[in-house]
Image (cartoon, rainbow, N blue to C red; front, side, top):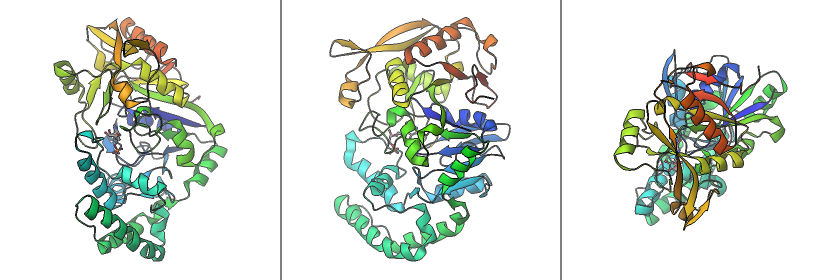
Length: 426
Ligand code: IMP
């Protein structure tokens, strides 16, 4: 059976967790391939409300194997907490031996570097994600599998910790990290995580060769992608679909579909250009009404109108063949809704998304105003229940993005979902 990718199409927080939990009923494996515990995925179903940072959003289905791929950076303390809170065992969760570890010095360096940048800070989540990826590329990283070889670890750690302490103390003026405590930490992690560590490429290949569906769970979003996002205001990995090939060790012909998750409006956390941002009282009102606060950091999310230019760009760099629209119900009752159909940059109208953050910050959105609707879309599950205003809005988004809408989320709960076309053929 093929793999289906579900990818964030904006700046993260599009509601991927809810969608993955919904789709996981028909999956054998849910696999994460990028990012770390900078992510925050919320799942709400009959079993309760789950706020997940690292474990995939398939954990509420007992038949699902949840996989953390090699492209993810893992803070074992966060992972162990989620394992214990959700009573996961190795029959339901596997962590790639090649995933890189987020070490205490990565967390320290993330925060120190943000302080150093001052007013040009990225607004990271402060979880050590960026510095862990830096070490991966520098060939100084430690991989999850190395926890199983304490002798080798005891040989490598002193040099790495000494080098990191030079940077922490001499460049940033921070407090050094104690080698002994780091080593003890890794020994505890090794004991508690050992049973979950395995080469997940084989596991995924076996499922694909047999009858199971693999659903690939994106974290963050296309516009935060290290290569395709609004650099430098991006995360340090590739949330776009390309990241899932390397982040899980799969070939492109395994994919049966790639769907993009779009919120019916836009949000962004952290710094960086956001052309359709709604500042002031209206933005505050929407934030409060929609509860737009980060799952990981609790930070207020910036609010904006749907950006068709950025949306089309995200569809192109991911090759989306389906659109999943979330939080449609949040727009219920609005008199009119704005949608950005083009930008004006230095007096010139364009429908091209400038990846350059400086140029993007000069982009003035060209809006189209769409009439709102008074009827509620909350919890509707059939296309026939969709009022004409909401339908017209969805059609306009499809038109702008250039991709067919397949699923509409009409509330936070699993069952508050309207399937227009099956994403995974039955
Ligand atoms: P980092 O990934 O913690 O390094 O943060 C880099 C940028 O990505 C910051 O603007 C964060 O706010 C943003 N970011 C990282 N993860 C998420 C997420 O899951 N949702 C929304 N924004 C995120």
